Length: 339
Image (tube, rainbow, N blue to C red):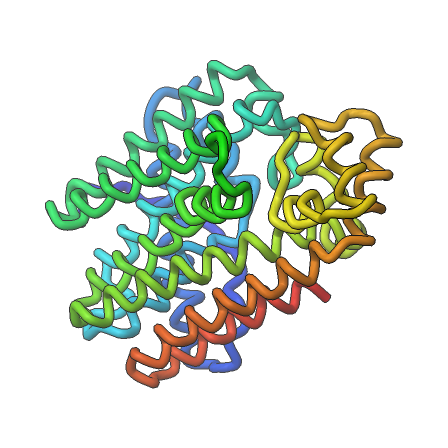
C-alpha cells in the first residue's frame, strides 16, 4: 500500500522459537512492522512527532505483533502486507492505552524511560494517545469493513474494562470474578485481536481465525497473571521490576486478592492495610511479607494452569504446523519468567 509511509527502523529481537526458518521469517516480519510503525509516527508537525513516538522508541517486546505474524502462518498469505498493517494497528492501540494508563495511574516511568505525562504533562500524554488512535484508524481504513467492525467491538470492550477497573466491583460482586473480567477486557482483548486479524488477513479458515482469537484471550490471561505474580515475588535485578509496584498504585492483583480473602490473621491484617494505594514503605514491606506467607501465589498459579490448558485446547484444534509449536513456546516463555 504505497500511501502508507515507511521509515527504516531496528525491530525488537524476535523470540527464539527453536525453528530457524520460522525465526527468520518472524524477524523479517517484525522489521517491516517496526518500519511501518515508526514511519507513521514520524509524520506530522515537528512539535508532535517526538511526543507520539516517545513510547514506541522506548522499546517493548512487540508481543502483539509477534502473535499476529505467527497467526498469519495458518493462512495462505502469511506475513502479507495486510497482515503487517493489522499487526501495527493493534500495537498502536496498545501504545495509545499506555499513554492513557500512565495518566490515570500517575506513573513516572514506562519501559525504563520517563512516562510522557512525567516528561511533559497529562494533557500532552492524553493527546498523544488520542493521536495514536487516529494513526491506527488511518491504517485500518485500508483493511476493510470487517476489520473496522471487529476493532470497534474490541475497542469498546477495552474501554469497558478500563471503566470497570476504575469504578470497582459492585456491591456484593466477588472481587476475584471482577478482576478476571477486567484483565480479560483490558489485556486479553488486544491479544485476541492480534490472533484474529493476523490470521484473517492471511486468508485462514473461519474456524482457525476464531480458534486463534480464543487462544489469544486465554494466553492474555496467562500473561497478566504471571505479571501479577512477578510483581510480588520477583528479584528486582532479574525482572527489572520493584516488588509491590501495584500495591503502591492501589492495584490489587490476583495473588493479593486471594491473600486478602483468607480467613486468618494474614487476611485480616491485609484487609486493614490495603484500603487504597500504599505509600508508606514499611506498610508496603509488611504487605509483601504477608502476601508471601499466604496461599495467593499457589492459587494464582492454579488459574495460570487452567488458562494455559484452555489455550492449548485451541491449539489442538488448529493445524499442527510449525507456528502451532511456536505458540506453545510462547506460553512456555511466559511461565519461565516465574523462575
